[in-house]
Length: 203
Image (cartoon, rainbow, N blue to C red; front, side, top):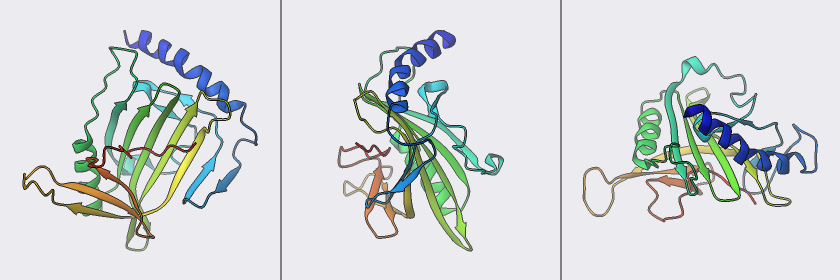
């Protein structure tokens, strides 16, 4: 059954990969837009659990130093009943907050999609320089739309994680807010705005 799922996942993602290969520009070329996102075009590799990755997704990190948070599936469109889709944002919250507050390296992946877009966010909690820490948020994506964006987007300067108590007073309903160095909010878990900003998608 697992091989069956992987085969159909490849058939699903293949048209998205083809559309990405038709994008203008040379693989590996990078650019930075005003939204604090660095983008590059890389060869996308379909993996298990519906994940997308690239050969250089780790960027020379020694992954053995990072505690593994596994893969969280948050699919908006799931054609396969045997592909688990449990979008546990509290698990994301707990993992990110624990590793951020305790200054421990961690690696977590979140898979998201729509009917014409598929993406995997590879999230690294890690030291940046001296005593400062940051979150490296790398999203590998593919789009089936003509001219749609695809490749790897790096969210820059995620340097703050804050724990916020929910107003309903329930002990386990707290959430975290992730901010850029500018103070701009990047996302929150669980998402109280219903915008679900748990992976970055550029159009």
